[in-house]
Image (cartoon, one colour):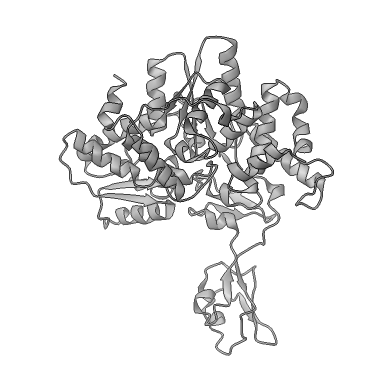
Length: 483
């Protein structure tokens, strides 16, 4: 059994038990990596997490350990032949019903048989009691039968991952396990957070970060910079933000910089670009940009040419500090995919989620609540509020104002990928009453990212509070510090 401290970790630091299980694997892999014992003891990790005498939610402890073995592989970076950062653990994906449209016991065996009449595939049949049945081999999941049933007796039983994936990148393979269409997937991680069994997860690059830190400690050829997303203000709620910053330095990072400063740089440049072009979609959310590429390629010319705040600031750091290595830490699984792009790869060396950062702290037994508070203050209010939906639009308004640019801004903040789809569809048909689309793939913005420790409306208030605490009150004053 885990000790009381570890049990408290589960309660206070994560939304779900699935997150906690993922964290435990990451923590143990990282602990062994710090000790240079990973390759020797990596097979012991599943046994550490699920001892033989501990109850399991699977059919047996051996299957549980086999699944944990797959989690360990992903914690170590996963299969290099698979480029998508979101991966399915097939043997863990076996507890959900097949799904699709089903007839419930609300079916009254009516005489109308509207469901049969509307089905163009002949998938509806009736038994001796006139109760409807659906032939899955013929059904194409169109939903026409459900729409006409007077008793709403036909319902769609979609799996949680399919419900979560708003870009329809998830289907079921021949073994009834989830399958991801890499061409459609935008790496947002919604399926990762919603899967009740943790059968879908994101690759971790935690070992790359440990290698960077250990390398910097052994020689002075480079320094490792931690770049933290502004949504960090709504995470690690059991400690103070200043203590989190101290914890990062305790881990071995040379210094900690706000990605919000990169957001200030982007807001300043993006407002100018918008005024010049007349219409623009944001480029800050990599999942949103990936969605445009896959679903609305004709709109790609409208995507802002600015790099994201992460890449913009990392580029500045690399250009001004030749010995720098940059690790981005935030709530976003899509940032891991963005860091692999040719336009970003030279500037960002690794990406961690907040989940992984918690695992790093605990792998070195760093209790951040005992640390003194350090300071993180080099961005403006407007850069910091990029973390929530609508923040970028507010920053663009401010950017136009500070640069004395006359432009009639009609911003449309899109909260979640479904809202993004509607806006992009309207633009593609030239019926959109807006000249700037702020696209955020996650509900609430970055504060709803799959790599967050906690999710919820309270996070928005924390981000706004964090923004108001900024010493730099304007975008211009924040950016001017770089000159």
